[in-house]
Image 1 (cartoon, one colour):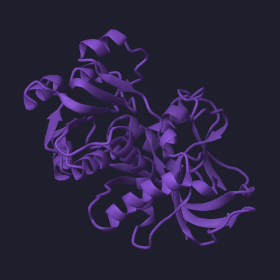
Image 2 (image 1 turned 180 degrees about the vertical axis):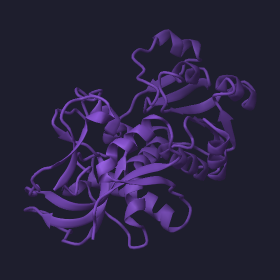
Image 3 (image 1 turned 180 degrees about the horizontal axis):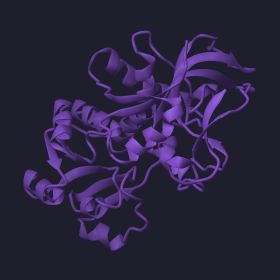
Length: 331
């Protein structure tokens, strides 16, 4: 089968399209014939070696990239119940989706409803479940609270805006262009701040009467983190869940005090997807939102598997306004 592998950590030029043996499922496992794979920053972090020693997502080379996908069940291993060949399924947080087939633990798979297209299911799993746990579990937003979402026109940002508004929150977001501001506002953002033109911290102060927001969903990292802390109201929470501009390598505890006795956390999605029930609960909420027309999924581009490097370049260059997918030959 065709797969995109990393033989040596580095830039997008390290992505190699190769033929590898088609794997067989073991006990409790399912072989999925993939139609689409999601492209995410976690793939970049794995490709460049940043996650080589990560507790939740540690890697060794050679590795087949990709942490989410959607397709149909191709074969099941011993002890797997409730899944048969041909079932439409999606998943995330199981490596190897940049390939025509992937082995996935059965408990991580969720059935895809008939009225949800496979490409939307693939686009929803990792970024959608991230948005869900951030707004529903880590910091359960309540009506009347205010949040700041960085990169509101990105894949996670778009989901976050919609889920936050559905919970009754006031949503402020940062974006990189007027076009991206229009996208964020069309999804419900109350304010879209052009961070390249203004000091977003000052704008947040002005918009909140100096009180700040209850929570910052921080996915940019190095370029914005310190100012994000000072966008919070007293005892607010900064959730650092990504670092598209570079990693935050240290935090001065005194900064948390100076910002107003604020809290800071660096979560992993894996710690909020620990059981089949937890996974199906989050995915089920998202699928129902799509089916009802209450959750829009913007797929920025669908790129052939052989051109995975192009997808990585677009993602790292912040040239996307939605989800990027890889497409396999699927009949």
